Length: 200
Image 1 (cartoon, helix red, strand yellow):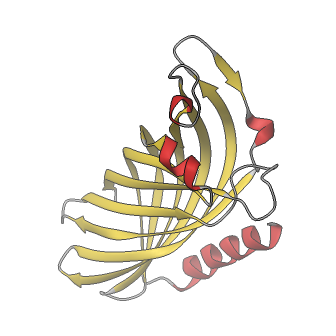
Image 2 (image 1 turned 180 degrees about the vertical axis):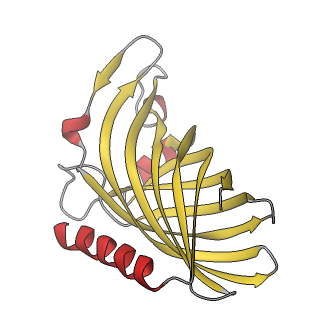
C-alpha cells in the first residue's frame, strides 16, 4: 500500500510541475453508499445508507480539454444490514458506518464548454467504523482493513464563475473486512453528488 501512496504523490508532483494552469476549490455533497459481497445472502440483506462527503480539490490543466483533479475528502460509506432477512430472529437492522479520508485522482476530459467526463483511481484511509442500531453503538474499526483502494468515474459541469456540479460512482476493489473467509469479499461502493466552487 505504501507503493500506491507513493504513486499518488508522484502524480501530484508531476501535475504541479507540468500544468499550464492550477486552480483550487472546495466541494461537498451526498453519498448514496452501500456494500456488495461475493455472498448472495449478504447482498439480499443489505441496503444503502445516505451519508455525505466534503473536502478540497485542485485542478491541474494541461490543455483546454484535459486536466487532472486530485481531491482530499472526508467521506462516509457503509450500508444497512437487515439480520431479520437472513434468520428467523426478530427483524434487526444495523447500520455499518465507515468514515474515510479519501484521495481520488481524476483524469478529466472536457467534451464541451464546462462539461467534462472523468475517471481515475482513489485510495481511502479508514478513520473510524461503527455498527449502530436504534439502541446501541459499537466501535468495529479493528474489524476493518485500514485502507480501501478503488476507482471512480462520472461527469461534471463547471460554470465560468467557478461554481461546479459533479456526479460520480465509486467502486471499491479492496475487501473491507480483515477476517473474511477464503474466497469471500465485501466491498464499498457509492454514488456521489457534489457541488463546489473553484476560487481561481
